[in-house]
Length: 123
Image (cartoon, rainbow, N blue to C red):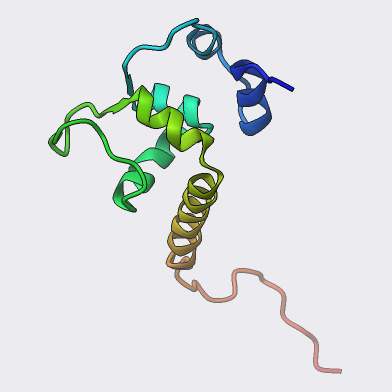
């Protein structure tokens, strides 16, 4: 059974697909290189997940882009990664581990004492 890119993206995404994403994924031939947003949609990740995958060494941008420059990814490499279930599992685990670690290190708000005016009666 062959599933179109549009249907697959909708199954993998928590956000509804916008018209630009839909138009991009329905192109008969994709461009040779994709920017971060396009690569994320193509792989089924959120745009903010790609820097996590890059930092984990699971995804490599083309060339040697500086920290603040636009990153591009080779479509041919993304096609291979997309078909590799082991890579998808590792990538999903890396993203989840990143957010688990980030959420675990969030400091609770400072204790401001008892905010309520409730005083129990000593009966």
